[in-house]
Image 1: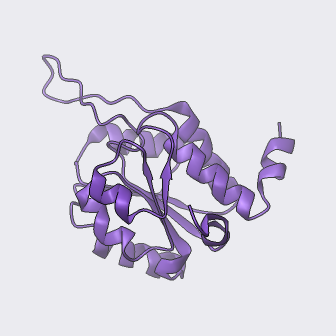
Image 2: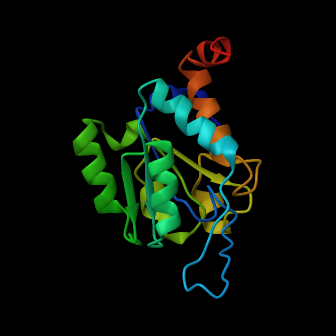
Length: 172
């Protein structure tokens, strides 16, 4: 966690994987061929707070899932990339769109497909139950499991480092 506050202060865009970060990674199947997912409402709050502070959030998921697209729509996450196991080109596209450098991007991920982004971004975070290689490459291993509010913790850390947290709290 060395330098976390300094890294968080520079963040202008937050990207996140979905399965294993915003969800536990479990997929629920029944007789319908589509799967369902459970998202944590606290992560949704963190996304809304970042957006309110003009810090865009993007979903970059390896799994092409209608549930992910629906959650992005509910939260007004404009940038939702599903079915992208190779995430580097998506990061390049987002940096160009928002006029930011990779060092001004945070990424939250939990599995091997996130490693190329972790090597490039200014703040790489993962849940405590991420795979070992991702935990080792992270700037911050958040002491929360995926699907249990890990994104909320990252959002809060960024907002606090940027002096925006008190305004969020005061709005309640």
